[in-house]
Length: 445
Image (cartoon, rainbow, N blue to C red; front, side, top):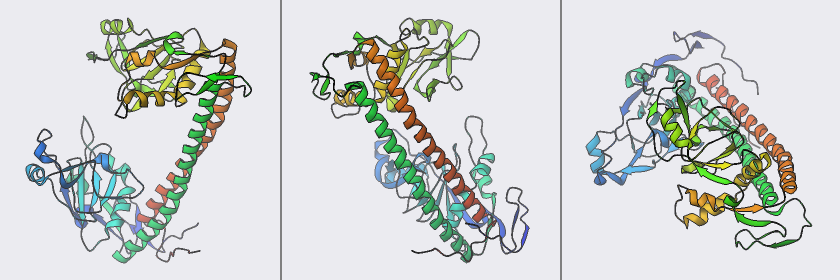
């Protein structure tokens, strides 16, 4: 849809804002709202926590497409509230994360307070609160430029208060807000459909992999009971064995060696955080001394062609095949020694993507949280021995099938990116006066 511009503009006096419609004013945030800081009660004091006062942190913001938030992951008691000096703010207050990442937003759905990582903007009644929300949503880049700090960026109340934005008359603020509510809801629906498509593609991809890894490629192959209740039947000529019978399984250190500066005498200590897609990334890796490195590789000598897998935390099962020639150590990472067999490495990688690991983790956890897989657990994962030529054929076929799903997923992710860029551009155009939506009306079928 093509939107019209305003008939007449004037200079705003604000570099990033540029020209604004003649009926608009460039106002600093402190002119239109009162800014309140948050705080955190003492963490070790049980009497301060899990009470009836809603308490929000930056991590609670931006979780859903809805901007409204009524509570955070934790709450505090009246005693906790009184102890720390945070501020209780009313419904409609704009909540802004003021520590990296600066600019994540929410709107209070009820009275609540925040920690020190948020600023709360209580908007004057002369202005429309939701309009300010949209303005700030389009201001993330500018707000981050105002952040200060060496350890992490932080936006001060003074910097935020002095930030100037374009404001039309209140009635026009509401029209712009109604327009953006309507249009962004349509865009969000498109994004949600693409996200659902990605979810379905990933589920189908996993199902295809799981079937091939556990049943093979021949639909007419004679089958037998695997002897494992959750696994069911497998090809008659396959052997069901612990994975330690197929390859050597090791793990890296679980200690934290002293970190050192990067140099020709230090080595990267890789964790699953350094897994980027299908490769190890050294960009943000921490380094350890040569002596510590030599100790680690006594138990886990990683080589090109080996499979690495996260064995702790929310990334359990995240895996890749080592392709980099750089020498490194591993921490909280499992190592499947497949250096001499590319087909086996690929088969193990597909196995870890098939859902079979998730089933076994669930059984090991017995209904509780399983935040760690021991080396013993890993060595006893249910696996298969099958003829080498059949294993290779499965890998070749799964590569063909998986890449089709991967390409469709990439296309859907690209579509989401393009749609999100359009959403951002539309909001920015509306709240800076580049388009005139005063006569806009929602079309009803």
